[in-house]
Amino acid sequence: MELAGKKIAVLAESEYDVFELWYPTIRMREAGAEVTIVGTGTSDTYLAGHGRNVPVDVDVAVDRITANDVDAVIIPGGYAPDRLRRYPAVLKLVKDTFQQGKVVAAICHAGWVLASAGVIRGKTMTCTAAIKDDMINAGAKYVDEEVVRDGNLITSRSPRDLPAFCRTIIAAMSEK
Image (cartoon, rainbow, N blue to C red):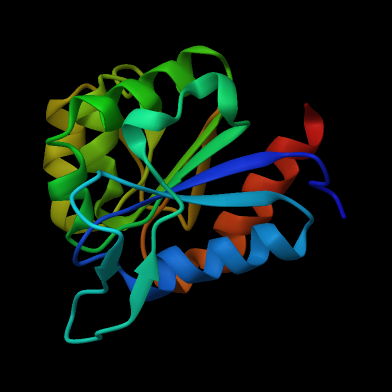
């Protein structure tokens, strides 16, 4: 139970990637963390994208949680990040968590949230190739690797990278 006593927020919105939300959620719980599904407040349940109508129930709305309440934030991909980044409370949670030196992890399209939160300038990161230019234009150094850790920022490209993504999150959180 490497993460016993640790609290992790997993962000959720409509059109989330089912693998990128559920795999880390299950893996972090398996490692002993308390995982909270955090939504934007627009619904109590969101459906996955890509024609997969898999629901996720929200535990708390983002305006009811702060960086002081968590040890890490995980941002799944899909097209949910395009929705998530429109909410100031989401951006505040991500930015404050990052600035407190806690783990912020993003996979696939979730780099959009990182860019909107203003936490990637000067950082080395990866993401899906579809948003590579967005990350570079936001000031990040893009590399095409399965997982990249730059301090407390952890990023991955796609569902095939989930094992390495989760191992890196657990390792980073175990150091604290």
